[in-house]
Length: 561
Image (tube, rainbow, N blue to C red; front, side, top):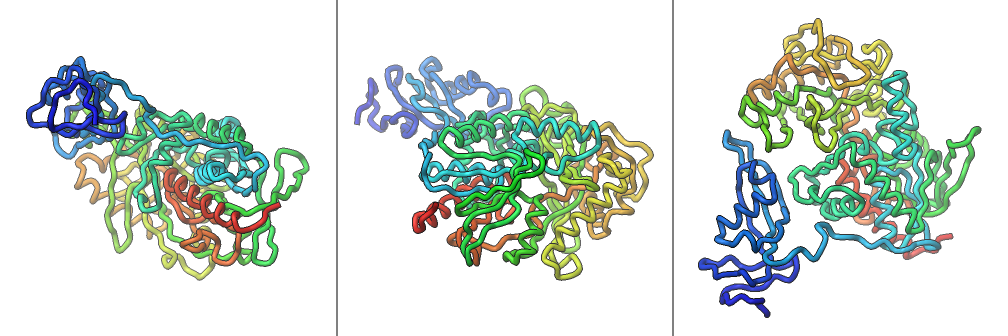
């Protein structure tokens, strides 16, 4: 083993960015030593936010010549704000007398799959996108069917929601290229490590234009202003590799030959009257959690599903400065060096979980209905998280046994009723009914409302009176608990905006745990959030990759036309 210009006895040379030198008690001069070394350090925010400051800190603490540290790469970053003195925890790779020879992310090679056996991917949200890219890796040609428009055209239809108060049922914040995540924040944090290698998903995002910072941050975030371009690049990779992407193409039926899936029938909504097409091959069904027409079709066709619990509630919006002050224990808020503060709350009230969901620091509240006579809220943040507001879903756990009846779609029906009630309370427009937080807890009507990021507008409404008691009473008690844990959180400066209902799929499409194939239909792979097997961008992406692997394994044993 060579040690370039270094006489250390108890050291080993690093090979590029993959190996590191052991720590030495008595460190010799390394002015001519080429190596990388990893350090775990705990620093003040003003140090952790700047590469030159990190270099200087490492040199001082480790007895190194700062001039020999050519570059540092942050591998992990988290903020410890539990106490008044706030620190940044970093895992850092230092390059001594050399520069990185590799990229910050791991690149995936995508071969040309023109003429290869094809697999139909229904839906181009994160589940469908990652399924398609993984199929290409494995030598199969994805044919992607997306009911909505491409990510650029979606923006025009979403702008019309505020301007005209009407929702395009095929192109909105939930439907279209990139799915619900494309324009509802782009957070990449998941607790579902058991589902598979989340690092692969993050690396693929980096390869397609996301900042390498998502590989190191404890709660990675691309930003709703940056993610659409990343998604567009992913689509271009599919096309360059010989795959197909069909926009405004809505699946209307699954083609069966006995218990084997032969493909799908779809409507081409880009022409009038609508045309009908058939696409042949095994099917990865990744339609997202809001495709209610798909659930109705599956139920009517006798394709096995089961009701699944969801969570419902409101979007709660505070001034971002107030959340910064609370979370960073300072009247000065986050100051110059800290990011906009996040929070996470959870408690139990009368046997059901009540918790914050999809927290968006420095973000917006957005209208996320997918059809007429619905008012639905969600949240998003731009990459810089720089707005005056911070919001989160505040939701109550709802299990199938909490809803009367035994219908397969009863949770979905409950969602729809709550969204319709919200629409009616909002004057039958996308104007959202809202109430100040403390007024809600105390059962008082809010006679005025604070300024809000919700563009279609708010109308004062007694949420405590008309929302289902199952939800309202639990939210009231939970807010009291959260206010005790975080002084200042329960305040009339915060506004509750109704209703948050699209937290997850209201059904689960049954599949085999090993093959990920439907329990009865060969060649059908229910995938991602819409199938009830994921809960966010990353977990949906991981599930998409797994479904692609199982679809490829299935294809290897059959002949496809």
